[in-house]
Image 1 (tube, rainbow, N blue to C red):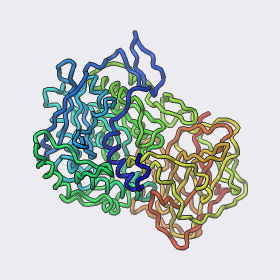
Image 2 (tube, rainbow, N blue to C red):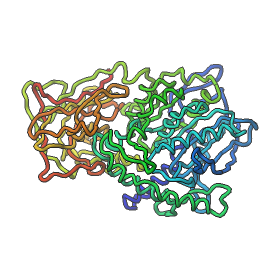
Image 3 (cartoon, rainbow, N blue to C red):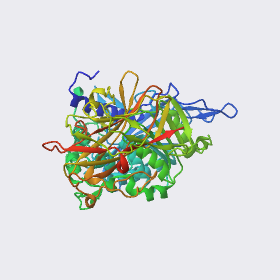
Length: 612
C-alpha cells in the first residue's frame, strides 16, 4: 500500500502503525503448532489450549486516567476490564509503551484492543485486565526522557505495578507482555523486585543494547537515525496521516486536551538518540544524565541487571525469531537466567510473530497468575522452527546436544569445503563501498519495515565468496555459526561483514545469516552470558589498530540459524567491507585491500553447527 512512497516515509509510517499496534495484534484463527495431547479432553500445546480454562468474557470496557509515579510524574494509563462474565477481581497484564497506548485516528480511538482478534482481546476474554501505559516523555504522559530505558522510566514500572494491585479489580497478581521496547522494559521492571510482578512474556528484547546499536563495534546508523525522527514525531503528538502519525488519546478527565498539550510540551526536553549514540561508541562509554547521574549501555540493558532479575523470581517466556536482530539475545536469556522460563524461536523478523501468541500467552499467564496446572512448563524448554524443512520441534537444550561443529574451509579458488588446504594461499579483495544488505534488511525490520531479501546473486559479484559443491544430501545447520578469518589489511582498520547464504539449483542466492566486526575491536574475552560464544568486550581500552600488512585472526560470531540447506543447493560464505544501507563505515581513499589466507597453519574457516 505504501510502496509508492519515498523510502524514508515508508519507514516512519510503518514504525508509527506497526510498532504501536503489532506488539499485541496477533490473530488467533490458525494454529502454528504441533498437535497437543490432552488429559480427559484437555489440550495444552503451543498455540492450542482447551479444557483447562475457557473464554468467559464477551467484551471489555476502557477507562483512562493519570497515575502519579514515585517522583510525581503523571503517567497516562488505559485500563481495559473484561465484561460479560463473572464480576470478580482478576489478574492484570501490564504493557508499557513509548509508541502511544492509544491514538486518535480520524476521530476514532485506535489501540491494542481495537482488533477483535488481537492477542490483547484474546487474553482479556480469558479473564485478565489489560493495563497499557505511555512511558514518561511519550504519548499523553508527562515528563521527559533523556535516552531510552532511563532509571526514572524503569521506576515508573514499579509505581504502575503498585497502582494496579491497589485496585479492587485486581486480585494482586500482575504479568507483563509486549514486543521490542515493550519487551526490554519487562526485564528492567522485573529488576525492581516488586513481589506482585509474577511473570513476563518478552518478545524480541535485546540483552545488551550495545550489541545492537554497535554490532561488532560498527554503529547501526540507519536504524538510530530513522528511530530518532520517528520518535520526535510520536512524542510531539503530531497529526501526519500521510506518514502514519496521529496524536495520542487524552485521558478521560482531559476533556479539552489541555493536559495532553502540557504533557507534549514537556516532551520537548527529550534527549536526541543520534547525539547520545555518538557519545558512546564503546561498550564501557558513559554519558551524563541531566540530573547528574552517569549512564551507559549497562544502565539501559538487562545485561546490567541480571542479578536483580534472577532475584525477582519472575517467570519468563522468551519469544524470538531467527531473522530478528535480537535472536541471540532471546536464546541467551533462556540459557543464562535461572528463573523458571521457556523459549520459542520462529522464522520471524521483528515485524512478525507466532500466529497464536494470544493463546500461548494465556497458557503462560494461566499457570503463573491463576495457578492453573496446564503442563506448559512440563514441555521441553526450547520450541524452535527450522526453515527449509518447515518444521517446529521441542529441544531440551541450546546449543543442541547433537550438533557437530564442522569446519568449512575457505579455498583460494572460491570453494568452501571440509578439507583444509595444505598449502598457504590467499585471496585479495578491494573494499567496495557500494555494497550493502539492502533497505529491506533485518536491521530496518526493527523500525517496522518487513524484511524482504532479494536474490543476492548480483550483490555477491561485488563480494569475496566461497561456495560449497552441490550438496548431495539435506544439511541442517542449527546453532551459532562462527568465522575464523586470517587476514591482513593495508590499513590500520577495516570493517568486515560476513554472510551465510543458500544457493539453489537455479543460482538464486537466499540470505540466511550475517555477522560483522570492526577489526580494531577484535580482542576476545569470556562472554558474560551463556551460551559460550566468541565475545568482543569492545571497550575503549580494547582498541588495537591493525599493523598494515600484518596477518591477524578475526573471530566473528554470526546470528544463530536453524535452516536445512536442501540437496542440490550449496552453502555460501560471502565477505564484504561495507554495508552502506545499515552501518557507518569510514571511507578510505583509496579503499583498503583485504588479504584472506586460505591454507596451511593460517587457513580461514567457518564453523557450522551441523545436525546429523
